[in-house]
Image (cartoon, rainbow, N blue to C red; front, side):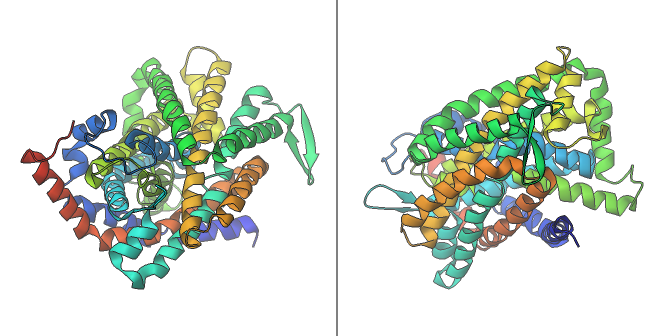
Length: 473
């Protein structure tokens, strides 16, 4: 058995039927406990995202919007571009359906974990804030569950440095840069017996350098950078993908029909309908979780740093982030790929989405490659920054506030960014999937166990809001 075969089997085991049941079950359970708040209060969530909370007492390291942008920076990344492409290529167009379905349920999961994070966070005498699943597991479920909190923190630190946080992101950046500057791999060099382009090496070095510049500055600097980059690049990417759909509007109904029919195995050939459905569900849900991180337990770590008095308000803000990330951005990417047939060209990763933009827009192939390179570079860069915070806070909890391991982690993190482009795409994404799944398990257990607390917090907030005891603007 090769190493890749081992990874594939491990990935299939982690993301098997039990994981699907746990993820969807947790989301459905919370949705019921809070009365489908992700749909009922969608407009309010959007308004809260754009307005400042009144009478904030100053508890927090960054503004509520900056905390939201840090969390969004870690979600809007290669998952929206490369992850969607990988899901549709392997799982078929039906994977997009399950990705969106899981996101609608995941909005409630993200709401719950962010409510719990703010409620159980700890604020130090120096103003530093620590919060996330490790604390609401320990404080919400009780000291006897501290071992589970430690497990989450350990897996979170590993996920940041070995999976979703570094290697996958910079791999996507280097792939897009190489496709644009040296698509035929003319300028190459040999390293450890493998050939790489100079563009790949340049992308790795530059990304690692700019990551180091910000990461060394800590959470406040990361908050300032992401609050500028994330909104701008999200709008740019949305506009470009909407243009692809508009220029190919006649093919849109057929593409949507293909997504729905493939989701339920109607076009299955090899493996039968059940096998096709399971593959579409596995890849769609796994890549969806990779993209929006609902249930993963990562976003609550950033959310804990927000200047806010109200856990429910911050939960609503970050719930809306799942809608933006997956229902809007991932959906636009997936439809652009399917509508142009790019999932059938025999390519993988960023090259699939690049082809979609190149074929779908009437501006020539270079335009699509350039736009995607810029978007992917900024999206992945901010994701790297966001996940550094997650990994650091997990280590801070593991070592009881000792910052020495955190400082070592920062340099190892930068090194991981540097070597990321020299690993294979399939291995990188499979490793990231495995870590994501393992990391989600402790968090989902806590969300289910603390669903009653989330329900009480939600009821208390809206009772105060509706009675006029609480200002919301």
